[in-house]
Image (cartoon, rainbow, N blue to C red; front, side):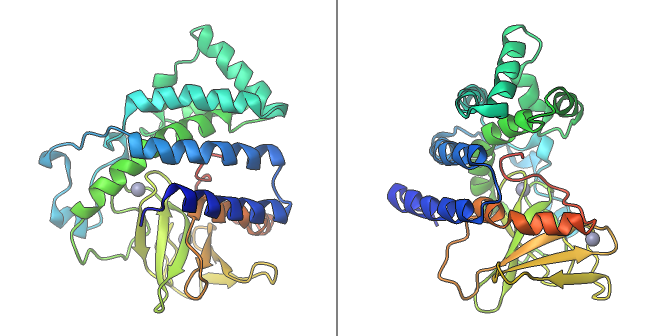
Length: 295
Ligand SMILES: [Zn+2]
Ligand SMILES: [Zn+2]
């Protein structure tokens, strides 16, 4: 479902108020998302994505055996738009003030000095090449995720536009017994239950595609032995379950949208429930993915 602009802004405002109400995240960050998200949604509509020809896709047999339709390093996107967005998001980051703004100034100076190449950053991220990001996390200890934020947020609009265009190519009745995205092979950053039957879906951390998952299994290591999987809830967050896996020591949040008259807004719902991440992490469980904006 595509929301019209007004409906989108109304929903976003509601979710942002909910996030601010939790008092868990700095205003700097919430305000940044408030400015970035409408830019991204507009950019998704404007993205120019060329889909590759037939030979680039996995065969139906391979997909039934668990291969994604197309690997993330080859996933179609709009590199021209991504570079343009990289620079405008950098501008928004400068305006946030505080440590994020200082980090943005440092990145901007590095770009001007020819020491940092946005195009290289935007190629490294889909390729899963961590070294560049790791180096900048070290150089910007006060805002370690600044470059992750820029790469993730600049690429998301066209990656998601491609995901929307590619989803109809997935074979019907594809088994959902694996935890990764059937389009690109990446892991979900959050999962949710939908419809009366409580079908479980994951939101892909790379392309944003929403895909079916097994209800009772770890999406990260496919463990399905109930003795190894534990669920916990917190009274302040009634519709949310945290599933922890003793096999891989990862956790994932599951939002229950079966009854609630709510529209899933995975990226913002993830932010609104950050208290549960803190809780899971203090118990020693890890989250293998970043937020939708790379922090
Ligand atoms: Zn994906
Ligand atoms: Zn696991």
